[in-house]
Image 1 (cartoon, rainbow, N blue to C red):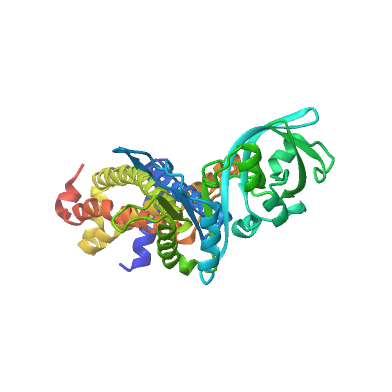
Image 2 (cartoon, rainbow, N blue to C red; image 1 turned 120 degrees about the vertical axis):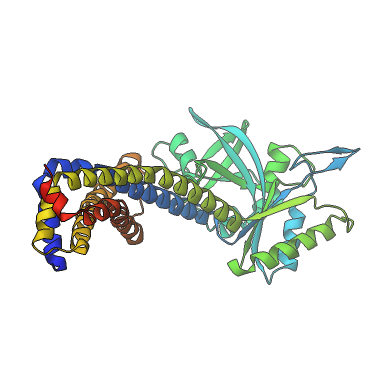
Length: 408
């Protein structure tokens, strides 16, 4: 008996009991659909997070104040106040072969008022190099100048969310808003960036010269900053740049060789790798959970095939009596099991891709369905049919033809 004849007999046996065959394949259908949907949603989430992190900048190093120990008391991260704007200027000058631009960042928050409208938002004090560091330009108007930065002028550039909540239709450029009851002239509006991976709205911000934040809003005579954002010429320079930046800051802060750093630095590669690892882990765990239904489906196929062997004992005896070999019987029942699982896999692929796209449309979530994930799921469904169908097929092939013909 050739392969095509075996396949024809197997398909005929399956379609003889359509309802039972569909119910048997239901576990495979649900399992494959769940695996494809979970992998598609997980890969889509990872791609979205990487894209949003890239909006901050892949070649950016962020330096934060470190901890401080005084009188035997160890302060937490950020308790040190030694990070200054001058540190950033020295980094930009001395490491120009690696560093493209540097901006200090000083954060504060405030209620902002324009006419009868008000909005609570974050105020970020930055330098004129901030648009170059963040690769973020003014969509309307202009950014503030070095003269504004040196003089600590009360000027600002608004994020799109602030504009949406303070201004109705007129352009905000040239208008005056009040921050902590002090007038600030609006120079421009930044292009819309959207939310980041943590759900924070990047457009809900007002950018002000950092000198203005320190002198006017914080009324501080100190020049310490909350962070230095450093943009590099190339992503390949991150390791070398972190080492040279660390050495330069230790020298400027006059730290002894055995003293720990009073600053911390991270780069976007570390954040991307961390988020990617977490996303992959969650996807793997959910895939394992979804795969349990494949195991259940495989057990269901084995049970039905065992029942089928019992029901068709006389048929098996007749086939052997007219010349079918044990290997023909073995191949026939394996083909039936594989056909059930393959058909279930095809239906599962259709259900999984459709369900994933539906979830993406309803939840506004990116979906990434790759050919490799679909192919792996489909091949896995075929492997499940072969594995769980082998024992019933082997049992059928070992039956005695005489006993089969006498079976009632």
